[in-house]
Image (cartoon, rainbow, N blue to C red):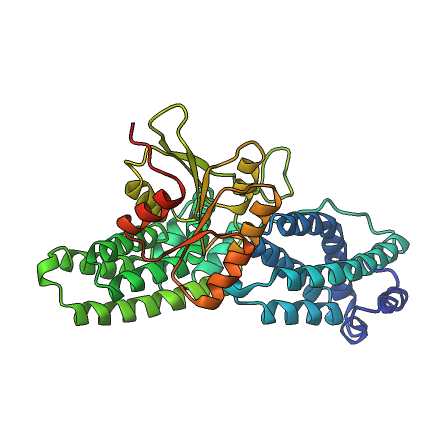
Length: 420
């Protein structure tokens, strides 16, 4: 219990970043709880900082912002208003993950973390003076009950299914929900692009991919609406384009709101932590997949860098008879890891990557000494964009939604087919 609240409040006033008004009016019980908050948050900060820096080094900006939000929540609980306002302002200005500037993030982190270091050093000094025993850090962990409360605020998700879900199944469910948000923009671009050129085969493929995702996240009514539209579109000869267009405009607007709601919740990637790395969030595993082995021992290698397996499979189908060995990677981390031991003969890089900017990754590929041609797949075929990517090292472009013939022509231009 608190022995001398006046002395403690005086020491807390020495923490320049903690609001004096907030602590000055606290009762003894509130003051005791507040000291515990200081202790837990200060003990967690070193690991939070480590994970933030790791994510930044891997150009994993969604995870960078997740850690900044976690740190910001701790600052709010500590009434560290000056630091919290700086962090909140940065998070608000850079809320559009599709337009994140790597240089801007680096400048902020280089400035903000030293300020946090000094602040938490002061907090530790005050806690030592108060003889408060340091606690073991517990970060990256959210109780299942709190996560359920967040999820139940999203009306499009089936509340009954979420309430009945076992705690041990929540991790997999959270991954599905986070994947829906991460993949939504690419799915919308692919669906709308396919509809625009009346490529109904691709329209159905996109709707099926979206339906599968909605089923995984228990968005039952939306999944049913999507399934009904898929059934109505199976007869290509009787598709009414205007009616389909109305449905997709309405449907994607609803999904856009769902994606925005998920983003606002700042859901954790995982709930529970086990093993040697307990106390630290696990990193996403590097995914490197052999899509096609090639037709001969000396087959050329094409590295496909795309976060969506649907795109990879489309490219694989288009290049089935090329005789090339096709390798698929889904992240910048996987790309860098693969290039440490391998030199592909051709790259196919997509514009929409998870956790990094495609332009940054292309420059990184060139910086590692890889000189093979790079083909860039994009839905934004503009002169200024093309000039920018050509300067970075791109040799050719494939417009999305992709066509097998276009893929075959562009790949054959840089890497002759080997059908033997």
